[in-house]
Length: 247
Image (tube, rainbow, N blue to C red; front, side, top):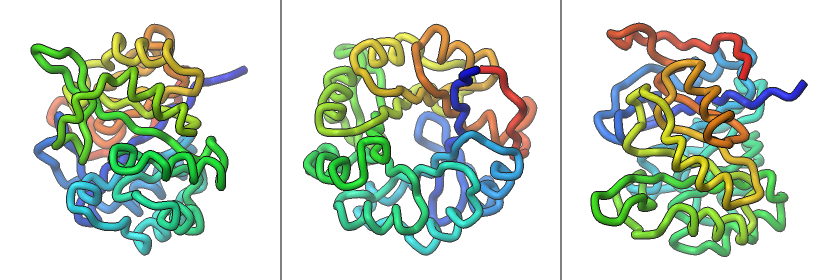
């Protein structure tokens, strides 16, 4: 029987594991290598590692850290952050990454997506879209870890990414990031209905019911969460966890 993937999304800043709220106020959680080791032991379906500083700071991925983390990941692992060239993507895959997550690069040279998709296959290329709500324009796509407004509609951007060659869309709501009050189901549904590739919902999950809603009501193919898997209780005590799911 098919079960939707449930994916821990881990944020890295200055080589440490952090968690944000609405893409701000990063709180140190611990060692990303240890976290991935725990998720491997708990048999997570997949894990996504996002370096939230690399693109904003204009630097390359930390290949040494990525290779070390990938060595602990006995499940598919995706990485995003600082990716701009086919050479970087090639090196990441050689480090043991199954999927690369491209976000800011799509606004600088979308050709890198087409080139990487041709070389490695579309299943290895994930297009990430960070979305924020505005008072006057509705949803808008943000780049550079949510610091720049591209003024693009997320549905139009998703279609452009798929046409360029991505095999999956990772949609993240900035407004709901770390809030644990549920996904933006309207946003997820709009994109899921517009493209013919799997959609991964992220931003807002705090309960198993939220995960189920992302699939049943949002139309996502997979669901991702951060706070839900690293915090426990109302005081947000740090506890890496991955319960058994029926999503």
